[in-house]
Length: 413
Ligand SMILES: *Cc1c(COP(=O)(O)O)cnc(C)c1O
Image 1 (cartoon, rainbow, N blue to C red):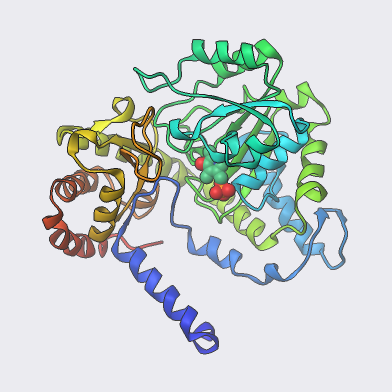
Image 2 (image 1 turned 60 degrees about the vertical axis):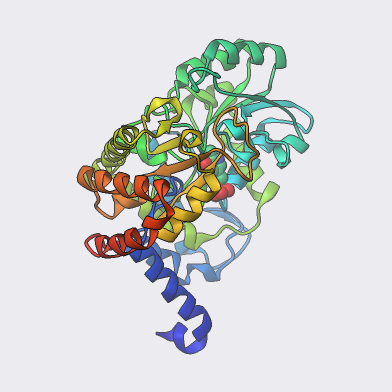
């Protein structure tokens, strides 16, 4: 109400966006709907103060309660992920990854990660990113035939490149990561192994994806994807990381602040603390399991309609579709589905013959619609709509109407 009075333009746009979210299906795999409790903490007065430093060692006064909040957040993160050290200050996933580079590498060192067109993230050494400009980046990919990791091939590449740091994580890989195999590979050259679980953090907590914690040295994550918190990032050091370098937790902290960032966003940290409390409940475990169940039902249904899924299916929250047999580009499919009320995104497929701005695939995920309470039955319905829209642009207005009324049964949290 106060916003409406102070700034009617912004208030109106927020209102319109709320309506858009209410009446359409958010199926971008990296997105979710936060709880009102998380949003309340995020929109609180905690945005007002500087808190440079860490609890007990701040550069500003008046932080008695900020210290308690950040400590609670850290303790919850440590308990939930079963790690001895957590830094909850990174502004988001990319700054978290930057801090890892700065903590364990010198500029010019060799690093490795999954290439972007094969499902990796920009910060894992893609050419336009700082990670390839300041470090010597060698990229690995997925197998041409299986479209999954070929651990033997990766081991050979690693032996040749002798990287200081290896990233494992993805934005578009529909299968399980074998952390142990990656650790054996990293150990063969004495490299640091960092798991970037941005997409799958919530699945790890729910026990539907193996945790990297027993195998890797460092874990980074965003907090706003399957974990369902505010936009943000975290860095955790495992027992293994501590064993490799007892100073690693201290190095990570010093890199985040003062190495890279200034004052932490404590409103975001408070909201993350709330999210971590929510994620520690049995209800969240059920939620994580349902994300994967939904995704697998959606995958099977889409296969029945003749869709060609990268790797043939999914173990997690996302599906990558190769649209080449459907005579439609990823871009056109994204556009048409958006008009119909289904938000997905165009995506490259491994060894894509088409350029990245007009790729052959789309990426679809179930975290946000599962938050709204949709289950297997609804996945079948949605698969049918996706098929109709992709088969014919004429179906768009009719499906838009159906989705609008369907969404009424599944309110946003
Ligand atoms: C989303 C994502 C990130 C980056 O997160 P931002 O918050 O967008 O900076 C990093 N790594 C992976 C694997 C991601 O999926």
